[in-house]
Image (cartoon, rainbow, N blue to C red; front, top):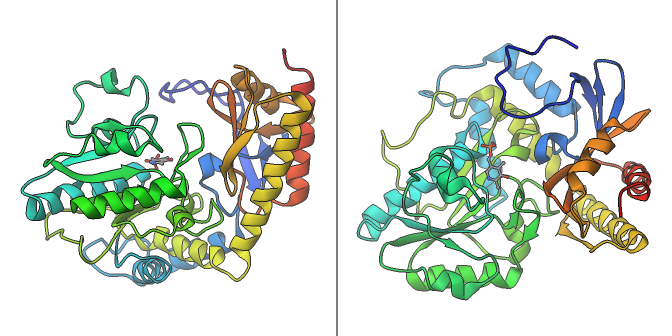
Length: 392
Ligand SMILES: *Cc1c(COP(=O)(O)O)cnc(C)c1O
């Protein structure tokens, strides 16, 4: 283990260095293996060291890495075409992170409001939502404590309650330009918006002539078993953002919208790396693999399998059940032992387990979409071992 004093302290990290990965497995500097059910926070949708991603990186790096965003390039065009072909959206802007894509969505909605809604700019967002770590996306987020962390916030993000239509309707006024939500709240604790709520929001936004924005940075790209999570509710939003899974582990994100909403003019939006071919080539490989025949059906089947095994575990240990969509799931522990379990899981020997606790009483599972049933079984063997020894 190397001396780490020059790394800026932003979070407690264990004294290990991860050196390699394959599929659902990570290996540290001492050769210890870990079964990875976090995958970089639902980022590595195809697991570690996916051959298609490696090949896309190698091939593109030999052609050109950065011709500049002033020019078109082939992977940028191909990825935009793939995304519009598989969704209800017509236009795509590429970015580097989920927060940046969401910043773009906020700007696009405000620009649209300026043109079409007499400068309306308010975007209704939700309690416990998470949209990123820039100042504007922190302001849009409903994470407790974030309203004062870097005060003052950016104004114009009133908060409603998820799955409570009245709480949304009450906030609508002539300054409202959009409603923005995660179809499944990820950081908030894997809380799905119900299809009825999504459909009601679509009807409400249509009625008031305002936009519906879905932040699918975590729930998009096959995670729920649909290519995009809003497709579970059979609705067509106006704007969608993607991140995490679309890059399969490399920094790539996207802002998508319909033709009716695409109102940026030259100078309104940009970014040094937007549409860079190295990342977009990876995105092409990711979307091609996710949309290969049968791939998403397997995600649905394995999601159902993980759900049933978590429910069985919950019953066995007297826990509070589980929730989620597809391969984004959470186990409700009923008591605040999640952080301890995450620690104990990682230090288990000879094999460690990587899981995550978005809340003190909740464990989150976001394995590679390519995870096998036997890896799910193995995870549960390890988890049960931990639960058997956890404080009551
Ligand atoms: C992770 C996440 C973001 C932020 O993405 P970054 O790439 O970390 O900027 C935004 N929205 C949701 C729903 C997320 O899960």
